[in-house]
Image 1 (cartoon, helix red, strand yellow):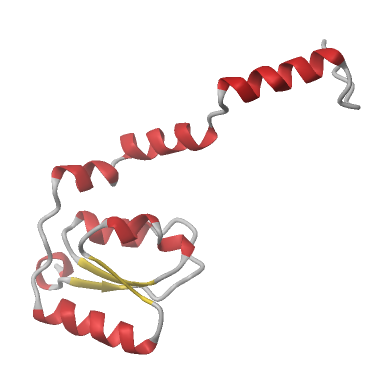
Image 2 (cartoon, helix red, strand yellow):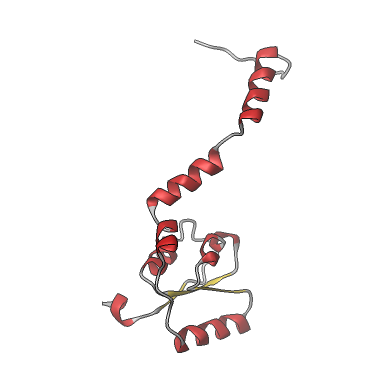
Length: 120
């Protein structure tokens, strides 16, 4: 029953690729204390995410979390943690602008790219 009795999740990792535990803690309405690192950039937008860059900031964030109540998770932030929103971010990140796609198609059709395209 840690969910009911604990309000702070600390994850000092800078190598956890999925950061699933951080997402789960935020979804549960907990404070998360994590290093300021590219792997945590997505989570920094959440009011209950407390990032630090050094020991002093870590201690200050931990003290803040111990002496305050986490903000309830808004609908907007709950959506940001959903699979639906994750798929939307993936689609956006993997999309190619039409102008760029057209330029690539034209280059491939002109055979001036030095790349031979074989079909079949």
